[in-house]
Image (cartoon, rainbow, N blue to C red; front, side):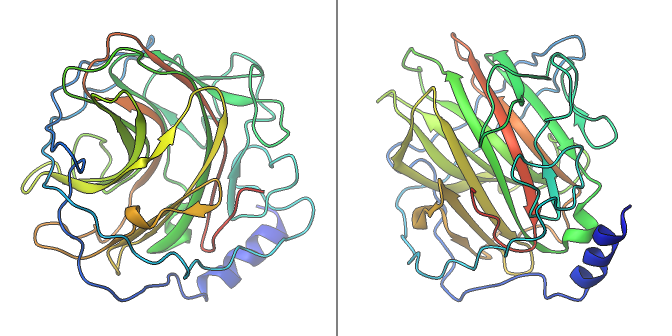
Length: 318
């Protein structure tokens, strides 16, 4: 560990870990127009295979927008080189406590195994696409169901109970047919336990339903009673073949989650609890990034992810 990074960790442990805002507990939400139940999915993947994913239950209807004018400050710039907890700094230098840009990985190689655990052996780095002026990104190859994830658990103790994250993602293709019920996907999740199929998980993902549009959703899955709920924004529609910057904030003591897309907070996805049966876990064991599909689409998803970062302050998309 270099001296600069060690010094920053010492300073970091003295910081207050989170921020909170007052507000009533949000209602239990499904996808506002059509509450849905996740069907069991089929495990897919490369040579290593992907673990099966769960069935779940969604809640009722209605949303409660929350004012978005309380966004916390973005982390101030550090030195040009930055300190890197992953394997490579972002092209402009790492300005967060943890950064991963995949720049030092050869085409066709896995992300650094000292940092990342894969659920599927076909998740590799390549130079087909890259975000933010880089040259490499992580390729999530075609999948119709199951999970293709990379997972990290070495920085969470330093992050504390309240932290921010960021990931860039590019959807190369998505299911083109309208689903019988829905396609429910996940981009990232904070996992209470070692398994993605157990314990409480906090997710950012979305749905494709009868309209055929692909929109964002915060998903809270307990893997037990009471099941699954969340907040949805059917107006925040994603399109293939462009980079998006997704940011998130999880405060475990405050039962709060917030989300930004391309630097703009979505108030419809602002969760402030607790509520009966849905209390955030006391600690997070793993941060998970990649893609999961729960309903077994007929045509596959394919995407790239890049520029992952974690910090105790809002990171931004620069």
